[in-house]
Image (cartoon, rainbow, N blue to C red; front, side):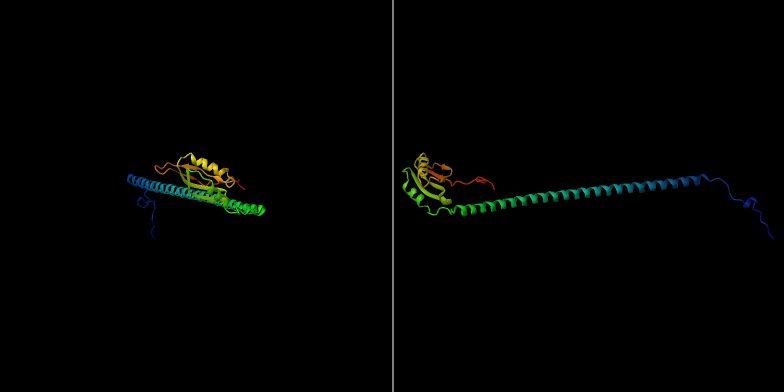
Length: 202
């Protein structure tokens, strides 16, 4: 039987302190690990910040696009309402005219322009030469064009026509008289235009 004595010095564990080289290596390893962790944490932080900025940019772009769509829809609705209002007003005016015709049974000038034509043929001034004329709205509006040897004769001619029974209810437009050397004074009386809303909105 063999007996082993563990209390002999060669069998006892080594209880000597760590060597300085071991401590240095441990510190270096710890420092390296801290540096690697710091770099990794910094890169993660930068990436998160970039992702946050990109996400905020996308949100701003989406918000701007949504606002543009809402503004476009609003403008489209306003334009559609304006078009519908204009169309409704035109229909109301047309129906009102038809109702006035039915109530008054006035279909316009039923006797033609014979009175105005006879007046144009009979009423004349030597200084005025009438070249063309236009009768509209049943003779209620008239346009004239011609030449005059003196510009003062044109207003006298228009007053002569307006004082006659045939043109007593006729509207004359703006008178323009130009000067043309050697050919007298060309003049024109424009057909009067009815301004929008003159007869009142429905």
